[in-house]
Image 1 (cartoon, helix red, strand yellow):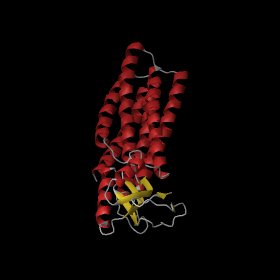
Image 2 (spheres, one colour; image 1 turned 90 degrees about the vertical axis):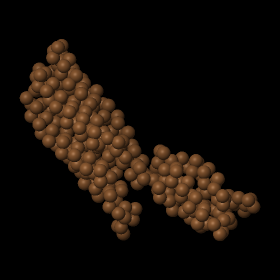
Image 3 (cartoon, rainbow, N blue to C red; image 1 turned 45 degrees about the vertical axis):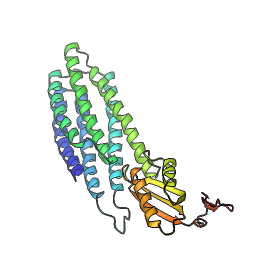
Length: 298
């Protein structure tokens, strides 16, 4: 609930300031401020969407979504990241045009709006910092962009005031947009990895197998599948071969505890006997099984 409220606060602050910022850009004749106001409006829309999707992602599992609604949070991250990506490209494009056709700007007005923008967006950034899900991280990236953008506008306006070099405004805008663009691509890659159900970056299949084989009663571990629902909550399924006929509950408990330490919060375990074949097409049981340890090949 706290993360949802933080996103809502960021949305309201961003939307309010984007309106003020637009008129401020016209008054100061600054492409950096006008571009940022349009960009902030897009940010506000995406953050608003993220807020509603973040709320929906907290709904409990039902017959339609048996794993719950967590992926709606990832959907929110996708929308937010896409808008941020397009917005950064537009700012770069507008800045290049301004470099080719420089115009005079109102430096004093830029400084005033930059200080105001830096204060408001810094407050929003404080609310969205330390995000856990990709959606929260994407919103946090938005806020970071705004803070850096206004800091650059402030420094640029001060420099231009004393040097009268107007192209500093678009050049610094390009620098900030490029930085955000790089981080946006990284965030989008994480989103793609989740939808493709790639093994989470904080999970090592080899380490999982090694740890589980050290549990008393576990003879083999195979068919290990690990994926993430939102970049934070990891799920897994696996087949466990055991000879602990009377202590299977204990073995499963130890496995769940071990997996919890390895960043996996939900696991489905298929328990099998030493010489049992799971029936999967790509599963073979060697004819000459070692008496002390069953070996299963995928």
